[in-house]
Image 1 (cartoon, rainbow, N blue to C red):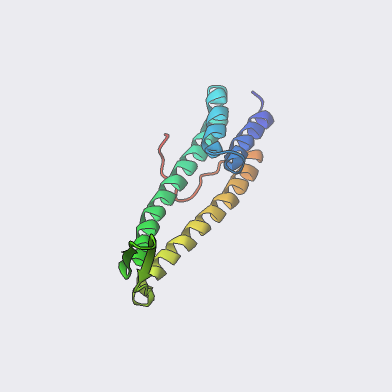
Image 2: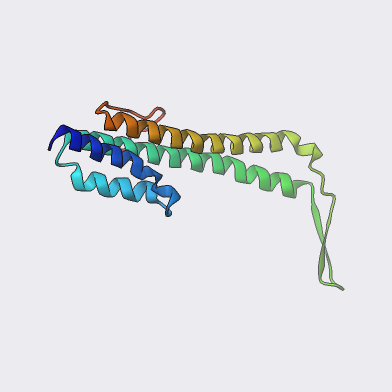
Length: 151
């Protein structure tokens, strides 16, 4: 396979990770399909396909960790200072003692996790575009903070 064609396929592999904005799990399915169909033809495509998939799996792991931190914090904060009393006559719920002022430090940690999650998605988008440019120029690119799931 010629070098320019290899570089173009490698760039498309990086760019295909943006498939997550078209349909669910597009950032895994599209690069996996391209990489699997072309990895035997070129070491450049094999290298770039592994980098894209490792980066996407790493971002997934970081996202899950942040959500495992954020969701319980917000649920705990919301329900900790609240007592729920049921009024049987009118079939209504009355919420009393809703006070989040005492849990400001927990809310701050939760908001920090949300900010980190948003930053992670912005950084992911930027690095996908940067990796695409590097691959189209024929330069090897390794995403930072990536766990090597595929070697």
